[in-house]
Length: 530
Image (tube, rainbow, N blue to C red; front, side, top):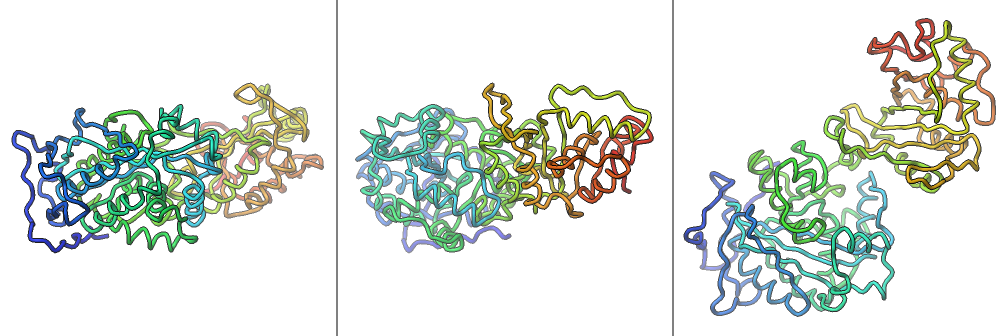
């Protein structure tokens, strides 16, 4: 994609740039700024309102300076601060926005793997939630800022509206936001809507917008611009509105991922060596850190690699969200999430996995029998099979771990699911936190495998390591109301039907004679393919 065309020049005679403040070093991250970054100066009067007669422009300092101030903006101050931003925009054409918000009914919801579903989740979050903070950080093409970031604090009253307890706890405990202070001194969303509408309207065409995973940020800003009206009902209508209001928008998460820098804001900033100023999950601090990451990406990968990736939002209109949600296996070893699946979260996790299976047809499986010690190798395959059946019949519950990958080596959602499967529907087993919870029954797990199309399909590749017990557990859940085949010679054809593409890494790597530990049982452990 080509770099964005230059924003249209406003009709004004004043087309000169304000020179850099004397004595202030210019730490340019662009040796030769591209022509489309040289934005003409537009007098503040033509944008919104005139700056004070003797308006003092703050000195330019490096984006990476520790002397940047995060300015807290409370009710009654927003018009003055927005006018200040508009007066500075001609000199600082990069504008980063970040929000913090209280959710109602959507906090902790699984991340969808379908673009329309992802948009509907954002639409629900924006429609039922409220913005708590909006931060604006601006910068010029030389990596200089006006010495401050503006953090607008909005009114929220948790006593008069039902928000998710987890969302409120996150704001208070993780973000350190004083919600009582916001109740008393916060900006009224709807009284201030015209003020912020002016910010967006007059920035249109002369600003490059920047965000991080910006769907919700854009959504909440559009909500306040619309006076509280909801977002469009369909994703395509939202994409069109987004393109009109924010024609040159850069989502740093999209850019970083396409340049093979994966993770959330903290992970990406650590990899880029961009240092945070202020507390995490505060809009002002996050906005400044995102802006620093954006310029680090330009510094490390070049202007063209970054500037060509505008107009995209994570999960909404960049590419298949199933691929977006993946972390590459080589980059996520320290970030893999282990999801403990039991009765209470079974339906939600089954739904998540079902939505990603078509994109991740390689299933890695590992079985654990609590308290079980591996058997010594038996001299023949029949003895191995008999011993496995006895162990599975004796175990009151098993743990089966599944991970999903694609042919490019992407691990779905950076996660491994650990299913606690019981022999009895009512069995409760202590979780990692110590509390007892009901396990998934064999019938429920069998239904899940069937609904996902994981068994009986040559399109699905199963991968194990010394996986005789793993394959046995998968077959046994399908036989939950019946006994396993009585003999090894009857079991193998059944297994080949249910798991037509099964590979055992122990066999393929020649590190072991076979998955049973004895040469004669190689066929029972794995179907070795060339």
